[in-house]
Structure formats: C-alpha cells, structure tokens
Image (cartoon, rainbow, N blue to C red; front, top):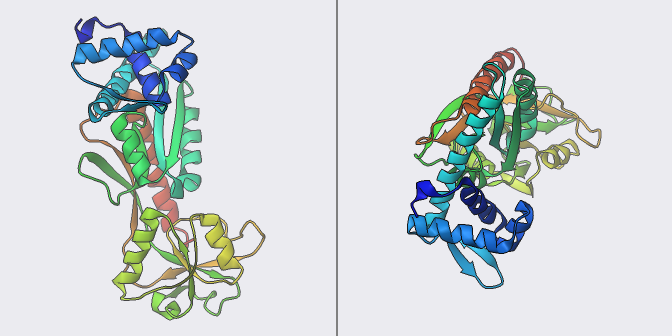
Amino acid sequence: MNLIDLPLRVLRYFVAVADAGNVTLAARGLHVSQPAVSLAIRQLETALGLDLFVRQHARGMALTPAGTEVLREVRELLGHINDVSTKLAGVGGDLRGTLSIGCLAYILARYLPAIISGFTARFPAIEVAFHEGDQSLLQRGMMEGWIELALTYDLQLPRRFAIERMLELPAYVLLPADHRLARRRVISLKALAEEPCVLLDMPISRDYFASVFGALGLTPQVRYRTQSVEAVRSLVANGLGYTVLNHPSRTLTTYDGKETRAVRLTDPLPVAPIAAVYLSDHKLRPVAQAFLDFMRGFFRREQRRRAAEPAA
C-alpha cells in the first residue's frame, strides 16, 4: 500500500499514539479498539518503509528519530487539512481554525494573555491554545509539530528557526523600597557589586544575567536563587538583596504587599530580545500568519509605550 492510499484516520491514530506513548491509551482516547490502532501503525510503517516507534516492554511506545520527523510532517499535513475544511465550512473570507503556540514561561504572564485576548476578539473563529515552557521545550514542540509559532527570547536558538525580533528589553535593577539607592533615577550596577543578590535561576535567564555581570567584570554575591519571578520580587521587597531583571511589570507591589523600586542602569549592557520564532522551512498557515501579524502590531504599540515610561 502506498502512503497516498492510506485513510486519514491512520495518520490521526499515529499522532494519538505518539502523544499518548501507549497504544491502549490512544485507542481509549480515540474511542476505537486497540487492534485498530495497532493495525494503523503497522500500515503506516509499511507504507513508509520505516520503523516509527520503539516498542518498550511495559513502558509503551517511544518515537524513533525517523518517527519524530514523520510526526512533524503529519501534524503539518493534518493542520492544513483542518484549515481547508474549516474554510469550506465557514462564511465568506473569515479565518477559522485552531492554532497552537508556545511561550517562554518567563515572559508569558506579561505579554501572552493580552495578545491572545486581542487576537481572539479580532478573530473569534480561531481557537488558540498555548504551551508554556523553557527554550528546549519550545524548540522540541516546533520540531515535532505541536507548536507552530513561539514567543521567546532570541537566545540560544539554532539556525533552523526563523526569528523575527519584536522587542528589546534592557536590564534594570530592582531594589527594596527603603534601599539607600531606591530613589535614584539611574545607577551603575557597580554600586551594588558588594551587596547580596537574588538570582532568577532559569536556564536562559541564568545565562543572560551572567552576561550582564560579565560585561562589567563583576561577580554577583548571590544569596538566594529561585525560578519564580514573583518570588524574586518578594525576596527583594523584603530586603534580602537586589536583583537585575528585564521582565517588565506594571506594578512594583509584591504578592505580600511590600514595595520595590525599579531603577534604570547606566551601564552598556546586553538587551534581552523577545522574538517570534518558527521553523524556517515551515510555511505558516493563514491562522498562524494572522497571529504573527497581530503580534507585530502589539509589540509596536508596546515599544512606543515603553519609550514613554520609566523602566518597571
């Protein structure tokens, strides 16, 4: 049997098994029999002449490297088929369908809810789902096809991704409200070099802030580490150290009601660039292209707003 002769359900069953990692669970989710799913996988492997899964006794099914590549292509194909069917079912030229995006956990709360809210208000027939994670998860999601477009930092990204920078975030220092330098408009990071520091300890953030201190030949006196931005802010507000962030916030009050102060840095430091990212060999579907266009406008407005406001 040739691949083009296979029914679409075979491809859908393949995706279900890849997602579930188990034939039984996939069959249960599809509301079909387990033999039907197993037969579909064998048909697809025979048609392609490839082993798509490694059968692991008592541990389910794991994709082979070839299976991972096929999964990405199959997801893309099914996405295009979904686009065609929703367009044919729609009225006029309105965009319809589903879109799966990814967002770096560090920046999700600040930007993504407003973007999704504005986008779905403009395109109510498009259903947007998002995946939150670190850089490695977003890259894997795009390569495997379950994320079509990601909002993340243009840092540590391989060449296979198309990258469009949206906004550059400068570093600033966050201080307790009663800190001796909290009322300054600008300071140098060197003025804090001997004081305890609170570090946002996430993979990309860790490397970025190392580059910030390294640019000035400084070694931070790290007292506390956490993977939560709000925990960093609260530790600072309670006088346990200062921190360096580029994560913008509209409020300087922490969850426990304490106050912080954001102060601009005079030092020539590297910025953190926020970017829209997708596979360079992947043509964006109309719904994803519309989302990308909306983000461009959103961040143009954000850039103008940031230019008119102090760092926060």
